[in-house]
Image (cartoon, rainbow, N blue to C red; front, top):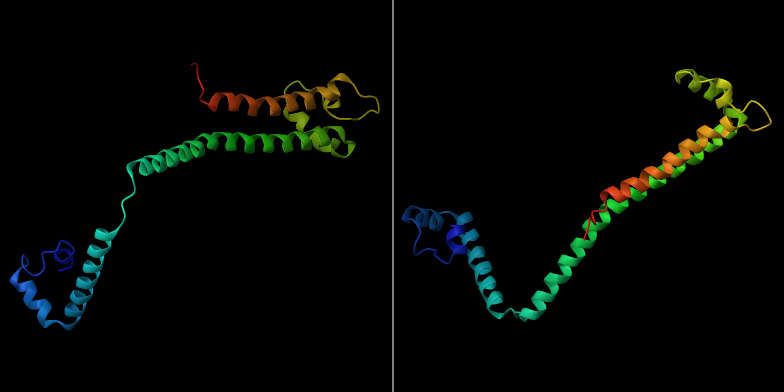
Length: 161
Protein backbone atom coordinates (compact mmCIF):
# COMPACT_ATOMS: atom_id res chain seq x y z
CA UNK A 1 0.00 0.00 0.00
CA UNK A 2 2.78 2.44 0.86
CA UNK A 3 4.52 1.70 -2.42
CA UNK A 4 1.31 2.30 -4.39
CA UNK A 5 0.69 5.58 -2.53
CA UNK A 6 4.26 6.79 -3.17
CA UNK A 7 3.81 6.13 -6.90
CA UNK A 8 0.39 7.81 -6.94
CA UNK A 9 -1.42 4.59 -7.91
CA UNK A 10 -3.52 3.98 -4.78
CA UNK A 11 -6.24 2.59 -4.89
CA UNK A 12 -6.70 2.55 -8.70
CA UNK A 13 -3.98 0.01 -9.55
CA UNK A 14 -3.97 -1.89 -6.27
CA UNK A 15 -5.11 -5.46 -5.66
CA UNK A 16 -8.77 -5.69 -4.55
CA UNK A 17 -7.80 -7.89 -1.61
CA UNK A 18 -5.33 -5.28 -0.35
CA UNK A 19 -7.87 -2.46 -0.72
CA UNK A 20 -10.41 -4.52 1.26
CA UNK A 21 -7.88 -5.13 4.04
CA UNK A 22 -6.88 -1.48 4.28
CA UNK A 23 -10.53 -0.36 4.54
CA UNK A 24 -11.30 -2.97 7.22
CA UNK A 25 -8.14 -2.55 9.36
CA UNK A 26 -8.03 0.55 11.60
CA UNK A 27 -4.22 0.65 11.72
CA UNK A 28 -3.84 0.34 7.95
CA UNK A 29 -6.49 3.05 7.45
CA UNK A 30 -4.49 5.41 9.70
CA UNK A 31 -1.27 4.58 7.88
CA UNK A 32 -2.98 5.19 4.53
CA UNK A 33 -4.27 8.59 5.69
CA UNK A 34 -0.84 9.66 6.90
CA UNK A 35 0.87 8.39 3.76
CA UNK A 36 -1.63 10.32 1.56
CA UNK A 37 -0.85 13.51 3.50
CA UNK A 38 2.91 12.99 3.22
CA UNK A 39 2.66 12.17 -0.48
CA UNK A 40 0.61 15.29 -1.18
CA UNK A 41 3.03 17.48 0.79
CA UNK A 42 5.93 15.99 -1.13
CA UNK A 43 4.27 16.77 -4.45
CA UNK A 44 3.56 20.38 -3.43
CA UNK A 45 7.12 20.92 -2.21
CA UNK A 46 8.77 19.39 -5.28
CA UNK A 47 6.62 21.52 -7.61
CA UNK A 48 7.35 24.74 -5.71
CA UNK A 49 11.06 24.09 -5.07
CA UNK A 50 13.35 26.59 -6.80
CA UNK A 51 15.81 24.99 -9.19
CA UNK A 52 19.20 26.72 -9.16
CA UNK A 53 20.89 27.79 -12.34
CA UNK A 54 23.14 25.26 -14.02
CA UNK A 55 26.19 27.47 -13.43
CA UNK A 56 25.60 27.39 -9.67
CA UNK A 57 25.16 23.61 -9.70
CA UNK A 58 28.38 23.26 -11.74
CA UNK A 59 30.28 25.60 -9.39
CA UNK A 60 29.13 23.70 -6.29
CA UNK A 61 30.10 20.36 -7.87
CA UNK A 62 33.55 21.71 -8.73
CA UNK A 63 34.01 23.07 -5.21
CA UNK A 64 32.99 19.73 -3.71
CA UNK A 65 35.36 17.84 -6.05
CA UNK A 66 38.27 20.13 -5.12
CA UNK A 67 37.58 19.73 -1.40
CA UNK A 68 37.48 15.94 -1.76
CA UNK A 69 40.72 15.97 -3.77
CA UNK A 70 42.38 18.09 -1.07
CA UNK A 71 41.26 15.66 1.64
CA UNK A 72 42.54 12.72 -0.39
CA UNK A 73 45.88 14.42 -1.01
CA UNK A 74 46.32 15.31 2.67
CA UNK A 75 45.89 11.74 3.91
CA UNK A 76 49.42 10.47 3.05
CA UNK A 77 50.97 13.68 4.36
CA UNK A 78 49.17 13.26 7.67
CA UNK A 79 50.43 9.69 7.92
CA UNK A 80 53.99 10.78 7.15
CA UNK A 81 53.79 13.57 9.73
CA UNK A 82 52.63 11.06 12.33
CA UNK A 83 55.47 8.71 11.46
CA UNK A 84 57.90 11.62 11.63
CA UNK A 85 56.65 12.67 15.06
CA UNK A 86 56.96 9.12 16.40
CA UNK A 87 60.45 8.80 14.93
CA UNK A 88 61.49 12.14 16.43
CA UNK A 89 60.30 11.11 19.89
CA UNK A 90 62.02 7.73 19.51
CA UNK A 91 65.24 9.43 18.42
CA UNK A 92 65.11 11.79 21.40
CA UNK A 93 64.58 8.90 23.79
CA UNK A 94 67.40 6.93 22.14
CA UNK A 95 69.88 9.81 22.34
CA UNK A 96 69.02 10.50 25.98
CA UNK A 97 69.27 6.82 26.81
CA UNK A 98 72.61 6.32 25.03
CA UNK A 99 74.13 9.45 26.52
CA UNK A 100 73.00 8.81 30.08
CA UNK A 101 75.05 6.53 32.33
CA UNK A 102 71.85 5.69 34.21
CA UNK A 103 70.72 3.60 31.25
CA UNK A 104 74.09 1.89 30.76
CA UNK A 105 72.94 -1.40 32.32
CA UNK A 106 70.01 -1.60 29.89
CA UNK A 107 72.29 -1.18 26.87
CA UNK A 108 74.70 -3.80 28.16
CA UNK A 109 71.90 -6.32 27.78
CA UNK A 110 71.13 -4.95 24.31
CA UNK A 111 74.77 -5.28 23.28
CA UNK A 112 74.76 -8.98 24.11
CA UNK A 113 72.05 -9.46 21.46
CA UNK A 114 74.12 -7.87 18.69
CA UNK A 115 76.57 -10.20 16.94
CA UNK A 116 80.24 -9.38 17.38
CA UNK A 117 79.51 -6.25 19.40
CA UNK A 118 81.55 -5.15 22.31
CA UNK A 119 79.39 -3.91 25.17
CA UNK A 120 81.95 -1.30 26.16
CA UNK A 121 81.54 0.52 22.83
CA UNK A 122 77.80 0.90 23.32
CA UNK A 123 77.82 1.96 26.95
CA UNK A 124 78.91 5.35 28.23
CA UNK A 125 81.31 3.96 30.76
CA UNK A 126 84.08 6.53 30.54
CA UNK A 127 84.04 10.27 30.96
CA UNK A 128 85.83 10.75 27.64
CA UNK A 129 83.51 10.27 24.62
CA UNK A 130 84.77 7.97 21.89
CA UNK A 131 83.75 7.48 18.27
CA UNK A 132 81.84 4.26 19.01
CA UNK A 133 80.08 5.93 21.91
CA UNK A 134 78.32 8.31 19.48
CA UNK A 135 78.20 6.03 16.43
CA UNK A 136 75.04 4.09 17.33
CA UNK A 137 72.97 7.09 18.49
CA UNK A 138 73.92 8.96 15.35
CA UNK A 139 73.16 5.97 13.11
CA UNK A 140 69.78 5.52 14.75
CA UNK A 141 69.08 9.25 14.50
CA UNK A 142 69.95 9.39 10.80
CA UNK A 143 67.77 6.36 10.18
CA UNK A 144 64.86 7.83 12.13
CA UNK A 145 65.10 11.09 10.22
CA UNK A 146 65.67 9.56 6.79
CA UNK A 147 62.82 7.03 7.02
CA UNK A 148 59.91 9.52 7.10
CA UNK A 149 61.56 11.60 4.38
CA UNK A 150 61.89 8.52 2.17
CA UNK A 151 58.28 7.52 2.89
CA UNK A 152 57.11 11.03 2.01
CA UNK A 153 58.84 10.96 -1.37
CA UNK A 154 57.57 7.44 -2.01
CA UNK A 155 53.89 8.22 -1.36
CA UNK A 156 53.56 11.78 -2.59
CA UNK A 157 52.52 10.54 -6.04
CA UNK A 158 53.72 13.48 -8.14
CA UNK A 159 55.62 11.39 -10.61
CA UNK A 160 57.25 12.72 -13.77
CA UNK A 161 55.33 15.40 -15.68
